[in-house]
Length: 173
Image (tube, rainbow, N blue to C red; front, side):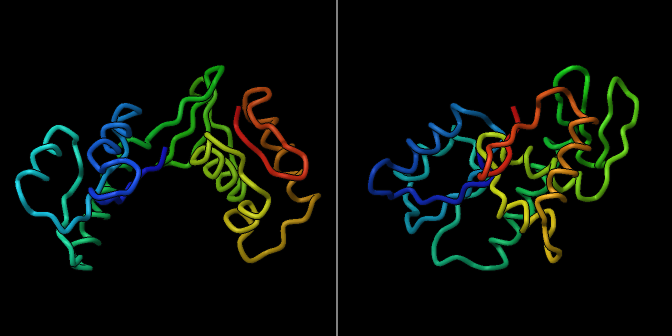
């Protein structure tokens, strides 16, 4: 599930209100921003119980949009304080710390980046290209480097939590 959704009310397949209700049925943490040209009550009233972050009338003011996105970020950071993992492991997003039953497990900068990328994409496979872009950034990710990083992380994490899909990437179980 994405952290922020920016949508319109008028969409070709599903109406915006129905779309928002579908998202809300899956969880309340996603920030939803509605962009629309409509200002009448007929469009506003159905949104009252959908818990959207903001309703913005087009044309969009850049400063207002930045303000809304900052509010979304602040709200989302409240939710992402601790990630519970199996077998008594926890990851603290604010401290960038992994613990096992309260005992601190040190992580390298690349291990943190790798783990957070997997956590943020737990619903899918993270490709090698994404790992190169987000974890290694400007340096080169070799086969040995990724294998070594994953091997070290597997010793620090619950058993079988990181799965490799050969030739594609990694995912969390």
